Length: 571
Image 1: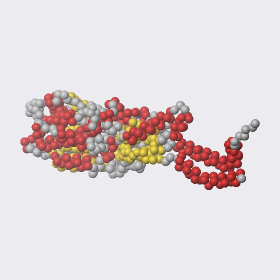
Image 2: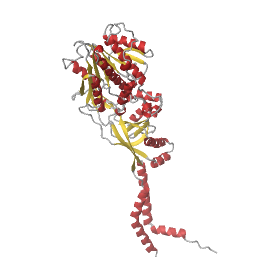
Image 3: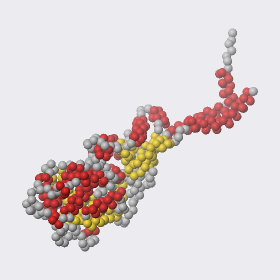
Image 4: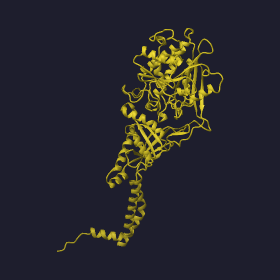
C-alpha cells in the first residue's frame, strides 16, 4: 500500500510540476517595465565654428536614471535640478563617464533665487566650451517628472547606506527608471542657409548722399537652442530697429522733413555665430558689386544690441571718433539728448580695440571696423562678456509668461526703459541728420512727440512676438515664419527690401549646425538588474527543493508519518 501511494503521488507531482512552475512565475514575476512618463527634452548646443567644436556631440540615450548624489554614475542618466546644479557636479558626471545628463528647469523661473539664476548664466559658456560625448539635455519640470526625480533620488541615496545587506535589499526591491530618447543620432545639417534682411530709405537732394546704417542681429543664443528666446539679446535691438524704421519712414514721407541722408536698415542672421550674416553682407556689398551704399559715403554704422533694460547706455567703439566727424556728431547728440531729456539715463562711451586673436568678435560693429567702416554698438551692457547676452534665462518677462509677480529672476525686458532708449536713439539720429546742434537748436527740443512719438504698445507687441518662440540660428531657415514676418514688416516702411543668404563653404565650412536638438524622452519604470538575479536564485531554489522532495519521497513520507503519528501512553 505504501508503494502504491508513493507512485500515485509521484505521478501527480510530475504532471503538476509544469503548471505549478507557470503559476509561480506569474505570481512572483512583475512586469519587466511599464511606460511611466513621456516628456520633451532639449539638447545642448552642438555646432562647429571656424574649425572648433562646441557642445554635446551625442544625442542617443538609453540608460538607467540616477541623481547626481549617487556614488556611481558610470553609464547612468544623471538627473539634477537647477537649484542643485553646479559645475563641479557636472564635471563629476563627465569624469565618471555618465551615460547622459538631464538638467531639470522649473516652469516658473521667477521662483528661483537670483543668485542661482546668475550662477547658471555664468556657467553656460563653460558648459559649451567643454566639448563632451555625453548627451546633455534640459527638461521643464512637471508633476510626473518631479515624482520620477524624487523616486530616483531616494534610490540613489540608499547607495550610501553603511550596511551592505540594506543596500542589496533596497537595490533588489526598489523601482528604477530607464530613460530612453526617441530620436536618432545627431548629424550635420547640409546646405543650411542663414538669412539676413536689408531695406532702405533714400535721402533727398542728390546721388552722393551720406549713408547711416542701422544694424541689429535677430537670432538668439543659449546653452539649448530650443530654450533660447533672446528677449533682451537681441529681441530688444530688433524691436528698436523696427520702430526706428517706422518713425523715420514717416519723416521721409514728407518733403519738408525728407533729410539729406540715406538710411540703410539691416537685420543680420547668425549674429551669435561670429556675425556670419554681417560678414557675408559686407563681402557682397564691398567685394562683389560695383554699386552699393556701403561703397560710397558711409557716415557711420550704428549696431543695436541689448537695449531692453537698465538706466545705463554705453556706446562701444573700436576707435574714439574724431571731432567734427559724423561719428563724433552722434556721440555728442546722444550725450545731449540723455542729459537734457532723460537725466535718469547715464550715458558713456566704452573704448575697446578689436582683438583679431580672439575666436569670436566682441561686438557686431567690429565686423564693420575690420572693413574700415566707422561703426559702434549701442547697448546697456558695459562689457561684451556679460552672461546675459548668451543665456536661456534671457526671457521676455518671467512674470508675464507664468503669471507671477513683478519681480523676475534673470534678464528681461522693461518696456518703459526700452521705450526710453528707443526715443533717445531716435532723437539723437534726427539731430544728426537735420544738423540741429549746428543750427543752434537746444537739446531739450523733442522731435518725436504726439503723432510721431515712440509707441510703447508697438514695442510691446514686437517683443512679445519675437519671444513667442526660440530664435536660435539653427532653427530659423530661409522659410521660417520669423524671417517671413520680419521681411513683411520691413516692407511696410522701407524700400528695396531684399534677402541675403549665407551658406557655409562645403570644403572648409566656417560654421556647421547639427540636428536632433529637440526630442521626446520616455521614462520607463523598471526593476534593477539585480532583481533578475535574485529572482533566478529563488526559482532555482524552488526547483531544487521540489526535485529533492520527489526523488526522496519515501524518506519524506516516513519522516512525516513518524512526526504526525499519535503517541501511545505507557502505563
